[in-house]
Image (tube, rainbow, N blue to C red; front, side):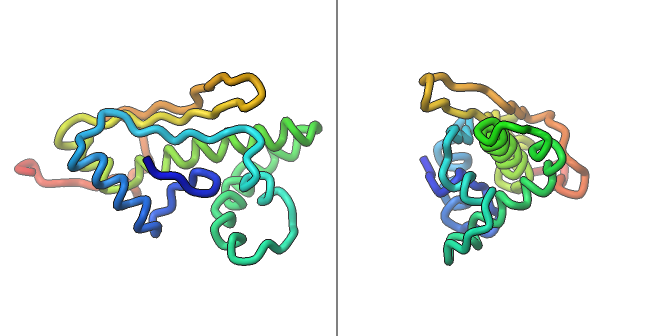
Length: 152
């Protein structure tokens, strides 16, 4: 298990990559789950403009998600619903980030695993909502796809 503020999958985060590599290569996990939660304070902080110090550099990744989906998010009138939607979009984006790693792609190539899941936990109801599911045949932009020779 790896936890961080706002469940980010950042390709320069050596801690996350080490946990992922160990889980996929040594433990041979069949499923990797990104589980966010509604009312996430990290996600809410990105929706504002307050200077929070060093954490602003980490939360910048969620601001990028916001920017990519800004017209959709800004079209939601209710502030809670807007916040919930950014939580969901962030989880989905982080699953995509997992799929872009060479660690996951190599396991997909060699062993047809793991499945990637994106869930959000609703603290208000206790329910989990599945937002994303990616398997070994998932479509990702070709620029992110690695290739290995046929021997590996």
